[in-house]
Amino acid sequence: MKLPISYSLRSMLNRPSRSLMTSGGVAIAIFLSVTMLALGKGLSRTASSTAEPLNLIVMSYGAVSQEFSAVEPAYIRAMASLESVGNGVELSPELYINTMVQVGRQPASAVLTRGLRSENAGLHPKVSLAEGRLPQRGSEVALGPLVATRLGLDTQQLGIGSELSFEGQQWEVVGILSAPGTAYESEIWAPLEDLMAAARRDDYSIVITRAADMATLGDVKFDLDTRTDIRTTVVSETEYFARESERLKPVLAVCSIMTLLLVSGGAMAGMNTMFNSVMGRINELAVLLLLGYRRFEVVGGIMFEGLLLCLLGGVLGSAAGLLLSGVPMKFSMSAFRFVVDQQVLLQGVGLAAVIGVVGSLVPSLRLRRLSIANGLRASR
Image (cartoon, rainbow, N blue to C red; front, side, top):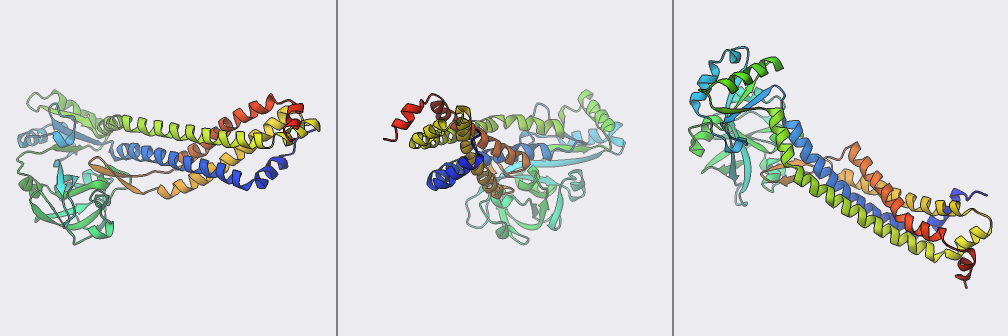
């Protein structure tokens, strides 16, 4: 005799408070887990999406970060004379600094600021203009859409015509950049010469080198690596941002540990609820065994019930997590967006299934050892 699925469904409906507590608890655990997963996904995607395969980053010798690099102007002239650079290769000397930015009376916050010439903006093809224009000489800037997040402001508070203060002077916002999913979203762009003057710098941070194809890119890198009169560190953007992703591993590990703790907590809560449910109707389950239902079918019904409740909570928690998709958040000197994609949602539902199986396991094992006589005696 097979135990009908309708038994488990009726059991869930006949005990609405327990069912709601189980599904609600799992939904909260899965929502928080999806938050951790979306945070990790957003960080890693921002790093990987920023790289342009045909770009090289030229930094000062021994430098590992763009912000702490200083390239002498004489090197630019030497680079321009290279035979490989003459094959349609573009060079963009840039200043890349971390500066304290203030809007009105708001507290100042650190924002990454890039100084470049407007004619070289094309060397960053993932960046386009959403509004306005590129900045020209005269203390003008263009902002990524997440700069407002870095400064603790709404995007409406930092639009075209707004003013902000950094490096001892006022700057007018004349453009809003668009670079979805990249680190450029949290950058300020300013005219190179204006930013160098404001920061009192007579050298550049980096030189972005863009080639027409991978073969030319390799030739340029080889020439720069072998020239003894140009002492620089040369890495492709792909390699540079892959290295940045490696630095995020401790953060991603924390996200994974938090997810594991949340799932473990959800499993323990589910186990406690299901155990109380089994013990509260032990006589009912004993009657099922007496009527001829096989023990593994009754155990399977309990596990199916727990799994269904947890999957319901998983779907609700994952659906709530969708609200986080695209939400900006500060991180270190930049900002990023939470990414809730299909993979994150499936992971959320999968974790709910794990909670359901683990949470139903102990009550099911208790039921397997139950004797019919003891179960019937429990009703007295």
